[in-house]
Image (cartoon, rainbow, N blue to C red; front, top):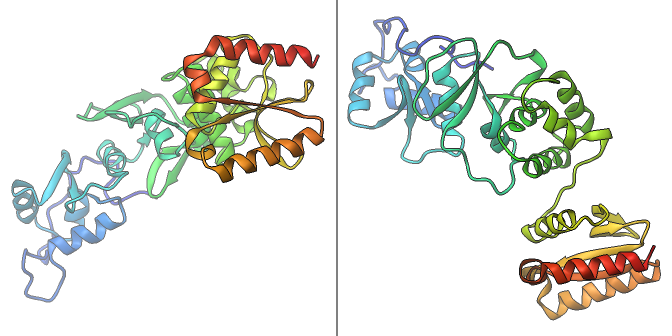
Amino acid sequence: MEAPGQGRDPQDMPAAPPHAPTDRPTDGGPSIDEVAAAIAARQHGVVTRAHLLAAGCSRRSIDRRTVSKRFRVIHQGVYGIGPIEQPAAAEMAATLACGCDSLVSHASAAGLWRVLVGVPRPDEVRVIVVGGHRQRPGVKIHRIATVMADERTVLEGIPITTPARTLYDLASEVGYRRLERAVAEAIALRIATLEEVVAMADRQWGRRGAGRLRAVVAAGRRPDRTRSPAEEGALALIRSGGLPAPLVNHRIAGHEVDFFWPDRRIAVEVDGYAFHSSPRAYALDRRRDGRLFDEGIRVLRITWQDIEHHPEKLLVRLANALAARV
């Protein structure tokens, strides 16, 4: 869905028609503030000069509000309306400023798709632009020759790269594990399938980031998705220690366990203080451990303190447990 005036510089619009509403209309029509608010309500609190002129507002009334800061200037000809900036206002404003071929991309798109876990919002909005385009403050422009039609979409009115394309672009900005978590989140949220990610990596083969994305989904393997910093720390320790790779957040015998080695019949549960400190939680955990034991599964419980302060001892404990079950 394209907003009115996209594709042209917001300043390059025709003059307002003679019937343009004034600051205080006498004909009962809407005021410029009402017009701006109505447009901005559909665009995350953002409106362009082009929108306002096309709606019949006068240049003079627009300029008066930018000078008084009732309209916050985000980019040239792009304004924020209202006292509070909406969560996706920066991304919406960036695409309006850069034209109809622009798409929110890379880490900014990953943030909007909610697949970038535990990563702060980028200082600059990442935007893909087909062909040349001048830089704008607060926007990092990635100029490319073309974007395939099936790599474009719209999310809550914002032009954006599809989840699979976003993951490919993200691969050139983040490390392996952060990319793996993003892929896992996209699959868990059902906004992309493993097959779509593999196909995107194959399509972009030879370009920057494609190799890393392909490695994450090598042989059609589903990436590991952790649900807490403690689980993430435990997985990092297991990998760094060279232990066999476990299944992560795997359902077995009617219960989901944090880590599971099916050939060893060993499960590991990471006890975070917030969820396992009460007497009731303790009792429920042990009851579940007993049911898993009845299924022939040994449960090892570890804590964040084990991971953070005694990693070597924890690795030895896990290695001995796995070796004993060979």
